Amino acid sequence: MHRIKAVLFDLDGTLIETDNRWAEILAHRLAPLRCLLPGLDTNTLARKMVMSIEMPGNYLIALIERLGLSPLIAGLADRVRRSKGLATRERIPLVEGTQRLIEALAPHYKLAVVTTRARPEAQAFVAATGLGAHFSAVISRQDVWWMKPHPAPVIEAARRLGVAPEHCLLVGDTVMDIRAAKASGAMAVGVLSGFGDRRELECAGADLILERADKLLPYLLPNESGDQQEDRRS
Image 1: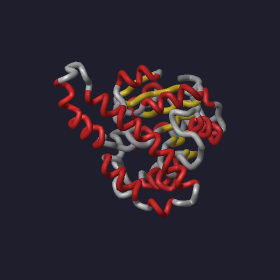
Image 2 (image 1 turned 90 degrees about the vertical axis):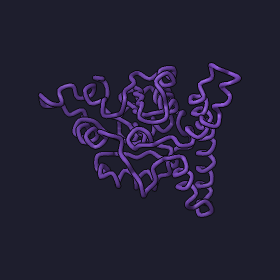
Image 3 (image 1 turned 135 degrees about the vertical axis):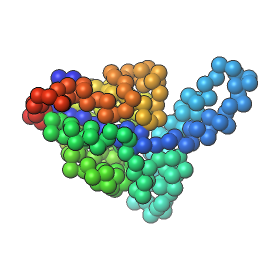
Image 4 (image 1 turned 180 degrees about the horizontal axis):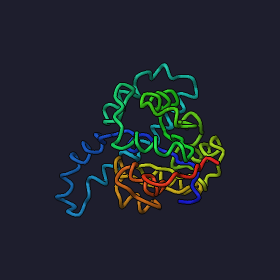
């Protein structure tokens, strides 16, 4: 970890809790298939199906926003997110340990958020957590033409932070997060607090897999409870 100067975070499932409602409902609906295919993992299949819908959906919404047609779908994104069990502006539950993690890392690393959410929504989320002052950049779907798993969001975050991508570490809960990080040259840490599972994150190339993001602290601040840490912002 000695080369890391900046830490980038996904939002949903990484810093903010989610319950993956769509995937759970779909897995339940697919359960009868196990009678025909006893070895079928319906949970994994449901998660992949939801993720396959997520990406084109994000690009469609981004296109609508870039065409200036956002008023036509006002409120739709929040309704969809509520139905999926994702956080909305009215409900922003942090994953356990998030506040301690960000406050501990901020004096030593440059921090940024990299998300597929819209810019106003992402900025509102960061501000509502009370941790906004610790993030030097918030990269949303409106800040890049290509979204994760493309490396563009990670590269843009690194540019705004003034560091090379290879000196960044991205923390995320999905295969898309891991692939975006690896494609950019950044390190990738997968967390099990969100949408992905260990095998998927391993296959995507995660350098490290943790239960949740705050478990990263001993790796980045090994002397957190003891010696003064060197300031990694330089």
